[in-house]
Image (cartoon, rainbow, N blue to C red):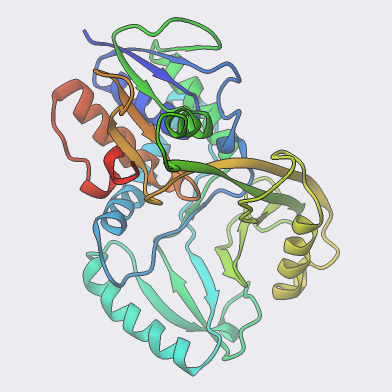
Length: 343
């Protein structure tokens, strides 16, 4: 029975641990902050696909992961007894003008092939939709691949599921056996210190929860903002993208602007009470893709990092391919995801 240690209890670390545990390995996860202490403890939880055009390995990997997500999170919830907030209710986006309308039609044709009949990308009239953002053309893009979950609750459930299957979640300890480093921004900073150019950075994001009852409605993406109904009478709004900041955990007027733009785009949200404000650093590798494979600084060990904005959407398949690699020697990691792509 293989012994696996995962350093880091964010979404990548927990997903890798879960897949290894499910293959029969003995697993311990070590993180001083506990599950979801960093970027994975946020509030937005939009699992949304890349557009169905200019298809590449990153988009194909994400598509596979989003399709896997429903069974993945159902298994986690059943094992832990904790609701993750996962639901695949789709997404609506306003169409700005005639050019955007033509582009949306082409993407609908592409999705019919690229998405293999597992989801659709289509145009719908805003007047026919119960819950719609303001659309200059009266048209909306509707996709059925997008899903949502509550990040913090999902990490709590995944950690509980790992424990329920006999895995350990520790705040301190010594790595044993196969070691996988999923330490987010701290892991990127360690790599930066050993290279002449930046391997990756922490990008600050701010988001908020507002009180509003819409648990069964699709998420919206408008004016660059995700508006995500959760199961608990809250709607997540976010997020900012800040490469320069003074305090990585402080919320400020930039979040105020995001909240105001969301309420302008979806007038029914006007007056909704803000119940939580959140800020944190998300790890972005230089390649902008996840960084998976042998660790560049630690011979015989591995890395799973760089989730950035798409970590939760990528996590089910990231866990799968990392377990394939470290337990079975099967390397299915796309070339663009290898650490050398960011070095």
